[in-house]
Image (tube, rainbow, N blue to C red; front, side, top):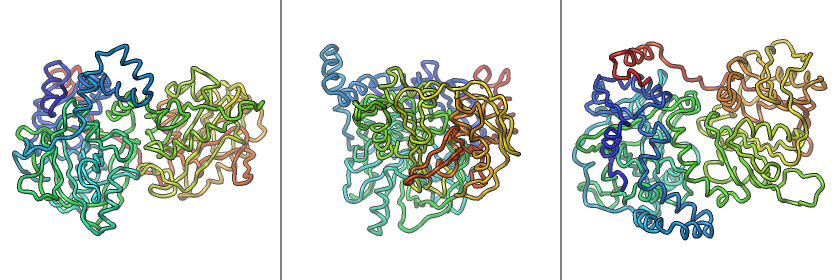
Length: 621
């Protein structure tokens, strides 16, 4: 059976040598975040900070810090849930597998029985009350606008469909302090576009009614996982949490509450309860986010706090985000392992997808699809792949993808979206820059992505390739590469990819840079560029070309397809844009971008002292 609550999980991790208890006082202002990130990078254990400055509550982090530990936490239910998902993906194959392994059937039956939540009359979470000001105030990065809850489980229900069937559980960031929030009375609730709470909030706004919200912190680890699962709309995350947690999630009505009250997770460590009032927004942010930049201050809904409960011995779990990879990378990998069999059932003709973590997840999606349309044509070209790509941009969280690159399995049976260098080589060998670039402009993009023309708005590029290779990719610089003034230090990053350093960006938002247009024009007809279908302009060529991690992060988080792609011989014919080699990508930091995250050197030195001989983190980082 799975863990009933966070305490059971942490005790089990400690018994098995997977958790380190730190008795020295830790400051939640920057220090705790630095420790968590550095221990994660070192592949270290989960941490429990017994003494935390400014609060009576201990804090725990890096619980899901390695894929092995995450699998171990869900070891009692993982195989049953995988079997259930595989059965849904391919019923006939799933049945054959069950006939081969009939011992799995009882486990799947038990997992099914754990799906529906269970209403109970009370719970440990109601043992005590406190206030927002007494909670741990985690500040992860120097420019953060206040303290944040970084592992919240935000629970809401549809006003027109009350009950668990109309519920949503999401991980939307919660700002506890700072800006213009009334201390102990208000918190900021930032949810990104396309998130499940949005329709609930929209209903409340339309009716002119408040939206009740409960924010759970802690509780069964399965609830944390469920809050980040990309489930289809209408499939409650609570149901998935029951199957993954190996027991029905116990939900309770608050003491003395009326029939309209939202249920509370009985085994949660904390619950912040309140309502979002219609028509009220306040500035939220900035916040160091998972793309590796700050998300800036914008108006978002405000939650008026009614009550803060906590259980006896409550522990405050947290994580921090920043330039990937971080702990949320493990969540993404684990979720991909669970849901990979479902990809063809959600996206017809798509075999594999990879939301690239190094590029911030949503900025870059690689996919392998099918190209089976008109097989009798002499020259194979992308057709079904375009349909595949539009499906990816029209469903689930893949709809937030900015660059979508698709290759055809028929061209290479071994093609996988998870071998990034090989996938890029496959695409660049085959791309026809006059035919294969399909833009969608002035559409929705990730709220955290500042490369677009405004908040939540930018463009997308669907790049599809099919057929035999069109070129041999070059691996050496052309002998006499001529670049305009201001551009220089060219380097071959990978076969077919050049990186060039450019001058600092000085343009406004939503406009082309004439310097990049001049660069593209200067490249037309230059000998030796036939083998380089992609040229990326960066602020620091040594950084951008140092590794695939750096290249992917700089190229795809700092560019908007419609604004920042240029090319020699560029043309527009019947609204279709194309060019000849090379496609030029402007991946410089723009004047309107959010600043990249940078650590505080003083805090880093304090953490170094904790890692010195005799310190609690010696031998860990």
